[in-house]
Image 1 (cartoon, rainbow, N blue to C red):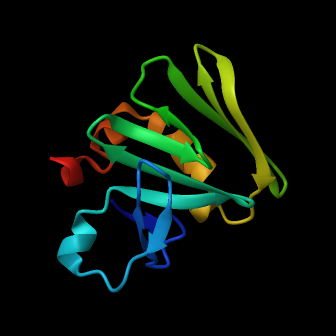
Image 2 (cartoon, rainbow, N blue to C red):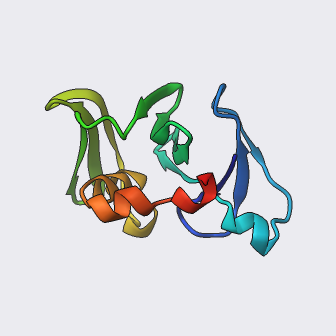
Length: 132
């Protein structure tokens, strides 16, 4: 599955959804880029991939994964100075809690996931064309 850096530097990678392994993708054509199915970011030293597969929107943080299309799942994100906290919750109970340094909001995967999950239209459209 083709994913791209959330920071937007054009770095593409292939994600093995079974193992979570990422490997650098060579040059990507515009046609292939249109099939991009996710983004990669980091919570400090922990890699996170936010993608859509046939099961729906998924978040992988390290080896932990969660189906974000489960209606019980929500996310919140808070920032204080250069630190941020991102949580994934099920029925309000935290399943995952990441505290990390967040300097550049454009590349903050926690904020991005929270914003997508908080907007039903954006949630349903994100990466949807690539799966059809």
